[in-house]
Structures are given as structure tokens and as C-alpha cells.
Image 1 (cartoon, rainbow, N blue to C red):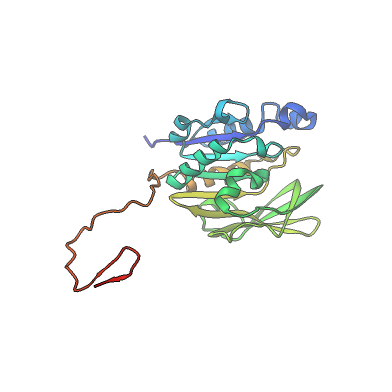
Image 2 (cartoon, helix red, strand yellow):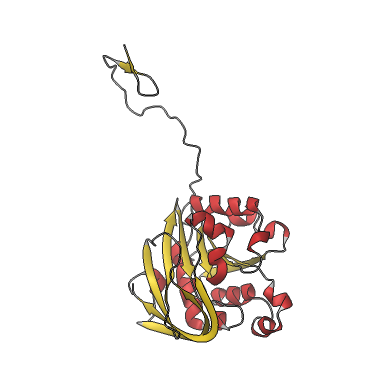
Length: 257
């Protein structure tokens, strides 16, 4: 029996508690809807974690058992503890996958791993979004056609201030005319990162089967394959015998006679 990919679905879980429109779409929280959709795929085992849990639900023990972490945040990016951000960063560098969703582009963890502002243009106008699949052979695009559409979404527009993706899988077009790099892949250390644009809280985006398919594909692509903890650049002995030289050099490269 194939071991299931262990996914932790992290959600800020603030809008759902205070905004009636969001409550109607996601009565149990966006994180719960995402987790249910992914678990229904069969090969993904999902747990959830939220901002207001101790350590935001992302303890050392939880992360050590997590193959892929998905992240949705919006109004409370600043409330995420720096110590937890550093913990997640180290897990990604060691091999854990990270899937950043929608407004998670401005989260501390995404900006830390990207090293940029991760800013963009935006507009809420109930616009149609068409996502073009420009890398149909990439694992994240498995099972998709040439494009798929969402009838209403928040617009994100270029310029998206992120490093050039290692691979760009989707490009979005919006009814108002903007385009956006909406499916971006990076590697950081031993870990893989995927950013997926759709997911505004007032729209039923995470009830959409194609959206869930993309996130599931991304989890399979980004899953932890091995854990190789980072280290503080150790000084190591030579594997082979080094022959004595006529001259020796100091540690700063200065010739010694």
C-alpha cells in the first residue's frame, strides 16, 4: 500500500468568524473546505491548523510529520509569530513542500523565502478569470485542458514582485484586461514552492473541482522527498590525501614563505 502524502492545510481563519458573506461560502472555514477536497483525492492525508491555535498549529512535531504545507492568509499576516515563520522556513529548506494560496503572497513566510516585497495590483469587481495552461506537461497541470475559467474572482495584476519562477505553469487573464503569473514554481534549498493565485474569500473558489485538482497536483509535485537539515557551513577534513606544497598559504590566501 502506497503511503499517503501528509498535508497540513493552514488557514488564517479570521474572515470566516467576522464576515457574514464569507461565512455563507465557507461556514467551516476555507481551510476545512480545502482539506476535505484534497482528502477526497485518496492519496493525500490532511490535517488543518489555524492562526489562533498555540504556535499557530505549526509545532515542531506537526511540521516534522508534514510533507506539504498549504498557506492561506490575508488580514493577519503581521500576527504570525516570527519564530514560527523561521521554523517553517527551515522545514522548507530541509525538504518540506509549501503551497501558497491567493493572498498568501503577502505572508511573512512567502516574502522570507522569495526575498522580495511580493506586491501586485488588485481589484474586486466580480471579474471572470481565465487561467491559461502554458506548461501542459508539468505535473501541476496534470489532467487539465488548454485553460480553465472561474466566473468571478478578485483581480491580481502585474507587476508581481517575485523572483522569476523556475517554471511558470499558469498565466491568468481577467475580464478587465490585466494578466498575471498565477501558477509559479520555485525551489529553495531542498524544498519546492508553488504559488497559486485564485482564492478570494468571498467567492466559492475552493469548492471548484479544478482548483482542488491543481492544489492536489501541486502537493504531489512539492511533497517532501527527503529531509536534509541545513547546517552552519562546517569545516570538514579532506577525503583524499593532500600532497605538501612548496609554499603554504594563510587562511586569508596570503602567501607564507
